[in-house]
Image (cartoon, rainbow, N blue to C red; front, side, top):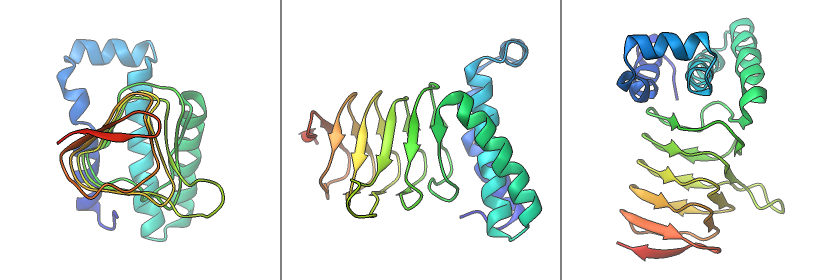
Length: 180
């Protein structure tokens, strides 16, 4: 949860780590062409600003960044509420990413697109996931699920039960542990 300017700066820096592998020339081209990578970078910036101003009760600024984030989110297909992700969030592709507002995901999460982290619809209990999550394209985590640190979820997998082991790979529908 971002509550100070220093934390805001740290979260933004960690979220932007992915974009440092682009040269200055490449970054200018991405910006000029409104490449989805550039738009995702802006979305993450607005998400963190929204979180900070929400947590510090600066309502007008919060609403401003909430609107800016939602405008880009509608273009990208993202619906990510504030205060769900720790620092170091990386989103590789545009395309539907839906996160329940009650979900809590740790630091260094990587999403590849087509992901859903939410409830099952009957009860409003969302997943709690540790640090270093890597979700493949189309992967879903649904319901009252708890996952530990360093979990990789394969493309198209649907996780609907808790796994107490760290450093595992989950794959399949429904997802099962395939390695440790």
